Amino acid sequence: MADRGHLFVVAAPSGAGKTSLLRALLARRPGLEFSVSCTTRAPRPQEQTGRDYHFVGREEFQRLVDSDGFIEHAEVFGNRYGTPRRQVEAALAAGLDLVLEIDWQGARQVRQRLPEAVQIFILPPSRAELAQRLRGRGTDSPEVIARRLSESVADLSHWAEFDYVVVNRDFATAVGELESIVAGRGEASRRDRPGLEAFVTELLQTAG
Image (cartoon, rainbow, N blue to C red):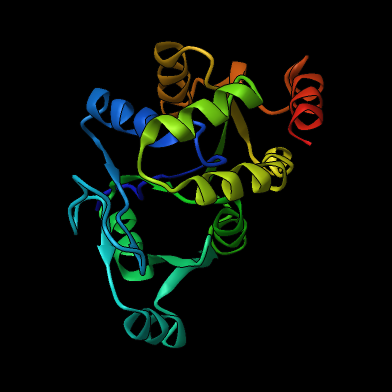
């Protein structure tokens, strides 16, 4: 019988670069798989159903909520997101290691249901860099970008709820930190490391 797999929960404010980091991490660790969430939002260019998300209608999403079909679910910027329970439980039971990319609300729900999950938060190096990355994506309207930036303070303020915190200053370094965490060697990225609280305090002040 296979050993139970590990679940790695990764959250970040919009624009912190978590999706790009996770794609690089998965490319470097073939034994790690991405947990595909459900969403009611429309696909972005280049996104594929079943690979990036399971794109579903609001009625189907609500049916899954009512039948306890999600490990976690939340509404973010007017769209609903959820992690299918059966999919995750089957993968972990088969011994697969999974990465779950969600927001802090979902991470909190996973923490309650699966406390053994390893929780990782990704921070931007600065408020200016966060804004630049959001604008550079070219996928959101100016109104959506402004809303994401204004709500980033609330997202950032939940960093201390996570086991590990990675600051995405340099892409290759951040991927290396994530890989170390997944491999069980992430002591240098723990949330209680010296200097991190002061950095986040300054980041929150400049974001206000």
